Amino acid sequence: MDGVQVSEIFRSIQGESTWAGLPCAFVRLTGCNLRCSYCDTRYAYEGGEEMTVDAVVERCAAFGVPLVEVTGGEPLIQPGCVPLVKALLERGWTVQVETNGSVWAGDLPAEAVKVLDFKCPGSGMTDRNDWRNIEALTDRDEVKFVIGDRADYEWSRDVVARYGLPARCRQVLFSAVFGKIEPRRIVEWILEDGLNVRFQLQLHKYIWPPDQRGV
Image (cartoon, rainbow, N blue to C red; front, side, top):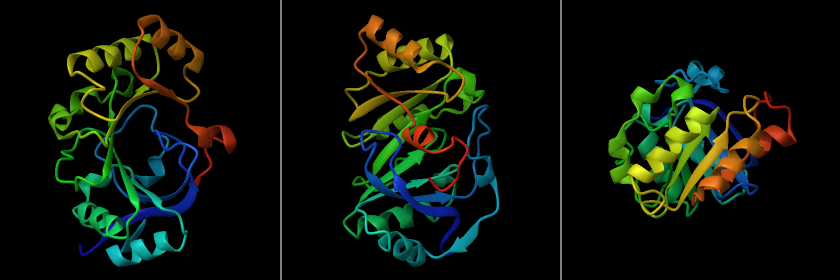
């Protein structure tokens, strides 16, 4: 297909990463190769609209914001994802690509910001992590762990140590599974262990109803 299958395109604030709070254009591509236990975008597994890369870029341009995130689902399972990212970068925008860590991300342009969301045990998808993606990290990229309990935290802590994060990337992010664990618990564990990671909340789920789409 000469283009991409798009679940939705919208403008909101960036709810996560070191860009949290900034206005952002979101391009959510259809389809995912994983089925995480806590997934909050199951509606993006299928359906959507077939669009050319140029049409997607023009929709983003209409929002008038310099930050764009390409997400899913899992955007990298679509062949058109990399050409789309390249086209967005050509506009001079900061482009983030949120990927679940199970698909090789090394073919993305170096100028793109990869946000690798490696899957903790509580997701049920840990065995699908592609650890080769560690080698593709640059000092622009971020690695995220979504934590639902103490076992997830300890697993994430050990991965950070084993692979020498965050020295390999811009930032390591620890996030809470919304509604499953009290965020304070993760913060306490981070402080107890003296980890050099950034704790984050999904801001959009506190500003709007947590199941609201298009935000």
